Length: 367
Ligand SMILES: [Zn+2]
Image (cartoon, rainbow, N blue to C red):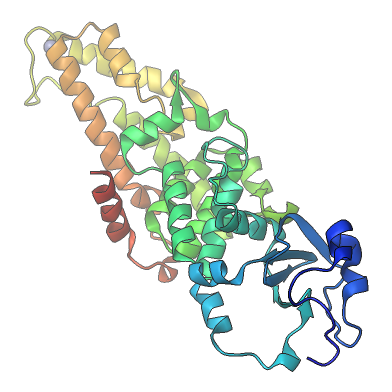
């Protein structure tokens, strides 16, 4: 305690009337050197009665230790053992803990923790992904289970595994919103988060969306934290490019023969059977003419319904074909991993089979 002449108890009058940022240097006890004494104080995540200062790459956050420890077992362990006082840097009477994380991630993580608010809940808002990424990355790193779970729920909302949710998210007026929205390349970061969490479902669905991006966008990467760029691993990049011909073939197959029956098939309708051949031939042409979008079999969810209307199929046929279409699209989504990695995942040894478990849990939550 030698030399500590302020900082415990109530703040002095000077602190109360002067912006604290200007006082950091003046108020530091002379014989304790804190490396971070002149770092930038975050304007929002600085609580004057906070009892812990996080020093993160040039920015200071003054927060409440109890809440942090209650959330994160890593911080709980860090403070479980009394630290020798000589080794602890102090500022404003608070211990200073240095962390090496992107400031942007830390801001989003701490906002979720301390502001008690939901931030960027709108899935297409520009901040949705940066906040989600921070919740997962730091939730994982600091073992903050509740934050991590919320982050993963947000990620699942962006990469749903039920075909109805996928349609609702990516189809607007027949046009896939994915290809027209802003920050579409954020899916690159989602692949990397999927790799971090070893979640096969997330990796496959995010890679599938990456395969829809223009190659230039894939190479340029997506926005990372703190103004950096984030890129796909070369193996994943190659996978996206190599998967496209296969996806085009799947698209063609999904929208033609596998939905509309052959004359010899078990489903026959006397009213409509002579239309089957015509629709099959016409759809082959139609799909082939659809051009570059054809590597996205999940796009154009209303395709079959529109064809049924166009060919004036009866209500029974329409219902049957749409039911079949729904099942085929769901099966395709469930099996996406094999379409993205027909020759196996070169990074497979890093993956733990935990997708089934986590997705069953999600089903229970929803059901
Ligand atoms: Zn019919």
